[in-house]
Every structure is written in C-alpha cells, then in structure tokens.
Length: 273
Image 1 (cartoon, rainbow, N blue to C red):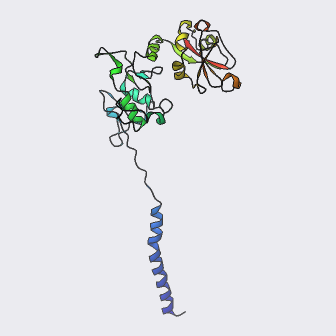
Image 2 (cartoon, rainbow, N blue to C red; image 1 turned 90 degrees about the horizontal axis):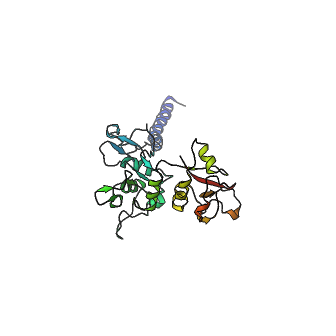
Image 3 (tube, helix red, strand yellow; image 1 turned 180 degrees about the horizontal axis):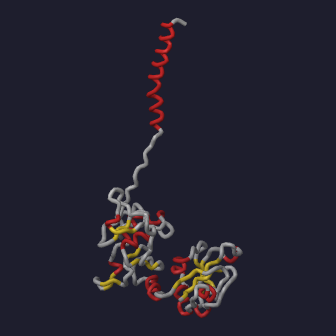
C-alpha cells in the first residue's frame, strides 16, 4: 500500500470513529438515572411536634428543611401516649404516627372511608390523609360541647370515635390493667404469673366481647359464642377443623369465666395487674 493510500485509510478510520462516538455516548448516558429525593408530607405544625407521612415524630427545629422529613432517629409508628385498645391518643402527632402503622391501618379499608357524613362527601386518598384527618378533634370526642370525654381524644379507629361507645367504656374500666394474649394451652393465672402479675378475675367479663378480642387477636375464623372456662380465647391455627381454627371464642355464660381455665388448643386473652 502506498503512503497516500495508507493516510487515506487512517483518515477513514478516524471519520468512522468520530461518527460512532456520539452513538456510544448516547447509549451510555441513556442508562444513567438519578434518584429522586423523597419529599415528606407533614401534619400542620402544632405547638411543639410534627408528624411526617413516614410515621416519624419530631420537633419543628429537627425537620429537614429540604425534604420536610423528620430525622430517622426516633421510633417509627410510635404510639406514645396512646391507648391501643380504643385507638385513641393524648397527642395529635403521635395519633397520626401510630395510625400510620400498616399493621393497624389497612390502606384498602381507609380509602373507602368517607371524609364526612354527607352522601356526597369524598373518600380519603391515602393512609396519611385518613390518619391526619381522623386524629383531629371531632364533636364525638367532647361532652357538653366544651369538655373532652378523656385525655385520649385523638382517635383513629375505623369505627366510632365516640368516647361514650362501648370500647371507650371498656378502656376506662381497664385502666391499670395489662391485657395479654397468652401462649397456647396456658391459663390466665399462668400467663400473668410469668409476668410477675396476677389475673384480675373481675375484668374477664370486659374482655369477653368480640369487638374487644378483635383488638388483640386475629380472629381469622370470626368470633363465635361458646361455653368454656378458657374463654375469652382464640383457637390455635393447628387445632382440629371441628374446633374452628383461628376463631375467637367468647362465653355466653359469664359465671364460667375463670382465671385458671385453659384448653390445649386455645390462647387466652388475660387481664393482668
């Protein structure tokens, strides 16, 4: 090959390389992505605290000015100052935080809840919208229009928030009582003793109700009337089919309620103190 021919060949190679270079660069850059920074939604600032839509609570000075999120240093989905039985809290921000816990509030249920009572009212779009709205004061949480039923007046229950409702009456009568789900086959005497406590016999009747049991137990197989000294209780999943595995059982006969009752296929709901 002559010198001029060799130079022409090199020139063609450089030209082809120049034409292909942008295509390669474009292909590489096409695959590069940038993570979008998460921007939190928050409650309207209270006197001291703020809750973000991630379930964190912080003071206003700790809020990230760029992301509007609380720092990840405290307990997420905190129920500080809340009564889990009634799903009511003494603080609005912790009510929102507790409500956002996906194990307590299911998105498929809250998006069907109306924002207000009129038939034309819309539904909540997100769990945060539900919690932020539900935890606010309402006419159901006050008496005589100027006083609260109790200090737990920020409520997120899907059912009525009214403190005069059955669950809140139960909550009041259970103050100072630890409600414990026992191990399969244990009596309430054994359950409470393992915690250094005693079973409070006269509180069993308060727990012997479906709506109360469903706060603490799964009750997959529904809630059924029964008769037994081991109730209120939940039937174990591995129980024989004729015993209704997963069902909660309450006793029709109050006189049968007992702290020392037990059954090999049930887990008791116990009042300990």
